[in-house]
Length: 202
Image (cartoon, rainbow, N blue to C red; front, side):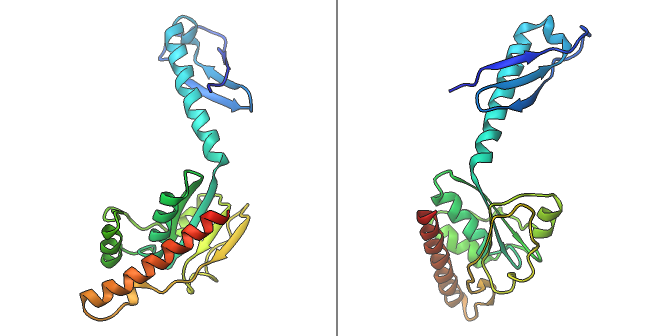
């Protein structure tokens, strides 16, 4: 249901492109500021108000979701799989990201194993957990998915819970191609099961 909104127009009638800016979103009303030109262009003001209303409602909905960050060493395998599975099985209740302590390139065996079950990770890139920290990102849960990252992950401000789900490192799988892929499939399935179990209980 659309929120009712009020439009505020500052003094003056300068002729310039109309720009609308959201001021605040309350539980029952949206306040919008528009440039003075809208006073002589009500159609433009209405369109700008509607666009800003939609954007503000989307931002409000995102703030209601549970924010989760998965962390591993390189953000090349385990954390990427966990992020993918939570997005798939979370029912739209989560905003999910993943990052690494030392970002690397995607593990090709992980990409192949995930592709086998319908998830394309071939265009994914690795992010740095420290970049996210410096940007001031906030999370309800920070979940480390490997032994090595537990003591090295920065403490994010406002975080409610830290969890540790240690899984084996896909990059350490040895043997021929099929042997390595079999090992990665096992890790993939363990992560999928853990995410499904967690989602069902939260």
